Image 1 (tube, rainbow, N blue to C red):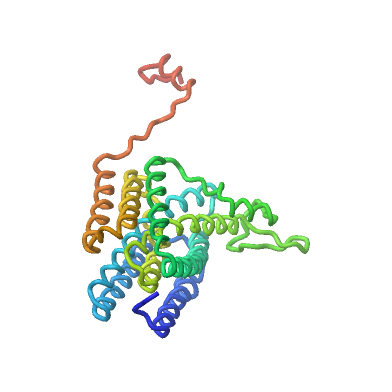
Image 2 (cartoon, rainbow, N blue to C red):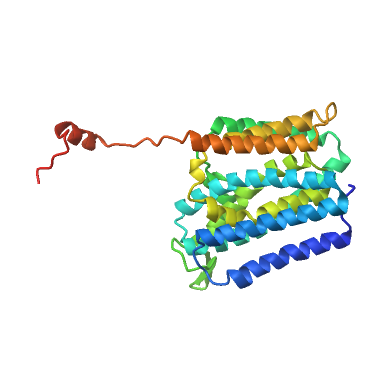
Length: 328
């Protein structure tokens, strides 16, 4: 496929990504610690600023069309990453992962995601270049996922049901307790996985599912592998900081999943009708940004009502003592 990037540019970008990851884990997060809001906000700003700076460079080097493609792809991937955060919150809660080790799990999860996305994008680019009809398949996948997400609504995801996770847990013995930040420990000459590694498997397995949605969505915006890859990677690199920034409030944006469903439906339909009507990239970006903004604002204006579960014993006490008096 045609691309704006030379082999040298691919190499420079890859070195940049590896360098930032090494700086992250080897310098700023060498010691395990709980990531606070201030740190998460700082890193979120850093990653967004780097992404926009890269977008500005693309604009001056390759023109406004490529810059718009990158920005739209970045916004789509960033929005779809919110679904990852929902899953991370559930995984860390169900496995009772200590907060000081969550960053370590997400770091290796992101590294694995980068490798998988590179493979998926390479395969996707090869398919798009060879088979024109594959865009209809990608579009159908997005439409199906959008409808499914719309129907599920606020239903909790179940990453523990992922077949990759089930297989990993079946194949390796695991300890019931954590051993610091270690993924594996030796006991009686035998290697055991810790719960931290099982969480990592679940995160990687979940990302495979998300990649099936996000990769076709960005190919609907651009067929340039470099634009698809870089917009994807920049969004993923900022995912950990975004998790620590939003983990405590993500459940308040209950309309956001419906917004994401609408985005997937829009992009899917856009791919299916591309042969007959080419939707301007600028309008695509405006529609996607508007849908996401409306879903967030709607969540704030109409907050979800939390139903309190009251036991039968408590109800009986209330009936017997309606004024709240105590016999003690």
